Image (cartoon, rainbow, N blue to C red; front, side, top):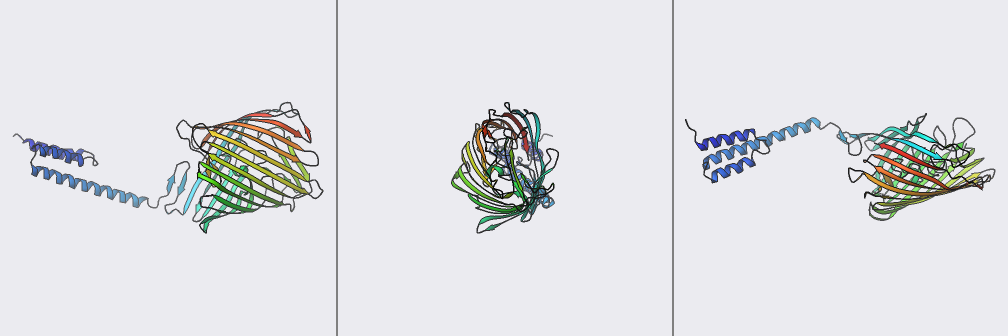
Length: 455
């Protein structure tokens, strides 16, 4: 028995409808049936039959998809959300809880040249930082804990809880625990984002301390076009860096610090200027002596040519003024720090320091400004980002035993293979050095390389 052509076509159409993917077996099939009907290959009644079947199949597929989608949504509604863009963060379904592992690894190679001083040159490697920790939120509260495992001892960095709310439309925050002192710009900028491998002489030292334990209150514009913070802190069990109470165990003293910043010009975050200033007062309590000793060209120098010490410590005051500008791929930063230490015996110490830097991204990126400081950049291409930079800095110490002064320039090249990794090459050179009131004929230098990753 011979089958009619129309019967064969109908059977073929139905078979095609059954085996074609669900997203394609309706519109394409209807277009085909219209062509066959218009050519008279199939009758109008057969066309209506097949068109109705295709429509019913479409409705069934959409209903099945909706059912599956509803089942998946119901099954996963209580599951946490995992973010992997630039970080790993786990957030509860209701958003009330979050947890994020944090850390950084920085491996350095250092080659120093003491240029004939009495100290030995250094050539070798160092695990500069190896930090592990976590941060997150619990309802309206936040927390962070991070420690550094580089070296022979574990060094606690951040360990605090925080609370944030709004006040007259502005951001109001409170931190309780060990956190950054609100004072210097270069001291506060994270080592993950610093332009150079080492901070200026004065930053993160006894004259511009980084972290202490206590309370910090902050108030800021929602977009951080202005910000104000103040802290009242104590030493913590390891004491104050550069201070002693004559005992082997702990020191005691309090620090009051305040910092403010504002943005007088902002076209956008890639074209802006920020001005900042800070004040710090250190109350002596049981502190009896002061010490500021600084390596010149690397973290592992075998000598600290720049130094000041004094007994009978009677308190100290410091202030800082800083500026930061970003214009496309170019950025500039300047930071001035003045520290005055009083001594009950008249052995006062005055230390003035400044640092000026400039950098440029050869591949078109911009330094990232975030909440008054800098943050990580994301390369524009898979080939990574390249940055060149230069810095000049100077520190002058005035004390009764003789003045010290050091000038140094640093040039650097940074390569960012990805958003969270960086390779750094720095050359440091001391151009003028005075020790105990006398000029010396040696000018130390160093060549340094770093490989880093953070999360």
